[in-house]
Image (tube, rainbow, N blue to C red; front, side, top):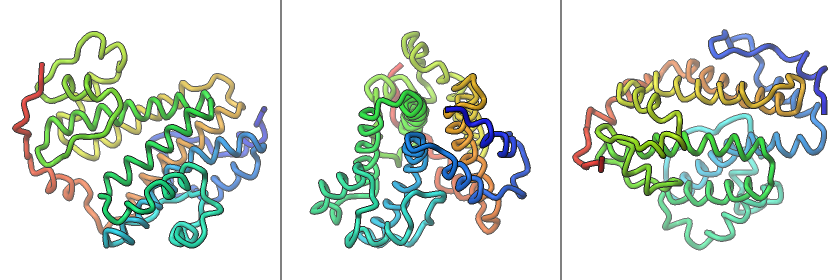
Length: 275
């Protein structure tokens, strides 16, 4: 479907733009209002990771006695409905309902990481079942990126547990501060060398910006027709990137870089990566 009028009405986005005048709620709502039924379903899967975060936040408060770490917007499911997950789940997508049904008797004994891994397993399985090329390509790239980072961090910091990632055997053996990636790994993960170089500098904000730059460039290359539904989906994801940094800037009472550096505390790993 051609979305000429929708895209023409939306402000042009750039990674370095001033976001103070963007009405994020209105922009997300305008996109959703103007999509046809099929594309609305795809749009929802671009937002569902926020709903997964919100459910994880709710479960952490309910079963682990964690204080609130905040909810993410935009979301498909109202926060009130997420918090009432025990009473009414009729608005939940199948993968969330399946996760809750499968783990109902285990939630109280699960760690946050176990919950998160199980949720994402269900979500990515459903993405594959949809056979939507844009969603499959986007989340495949996103998972590869996160898997590289998880493998590098595991081989760098002693306090991290073994990550549950795809292609773990190769990545955990070849990704680390003193490891050398094989030719085959570089072919399958062409971003790996530049990404590792950024990770070794241990500058959290720079790392986050670089990750988002990779995602932004991937989205830029994902379509040729600037008025296509793929262009709208890419715009939605770019808007989420900008909103995240906008929200971080608003949280002026938290120095994220100092906080992360205190956690890391230059705690180099004693693990010996295999070359």
